[in-house]
Image (cartoon, rainbow, N blue to C red):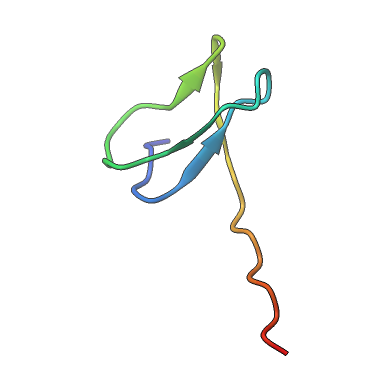
Length: 47
């Protein structure tokens, strides 16, 4: 799976987070493991 522009990835070992600023082939890795793509955070309500 290619890394995607604007996506955040997190290391499950050391909790390092990275933001992808360039799209390309390959994977994002840290601590010898592939990093996991984070889900978008919900925006707070404007009530």
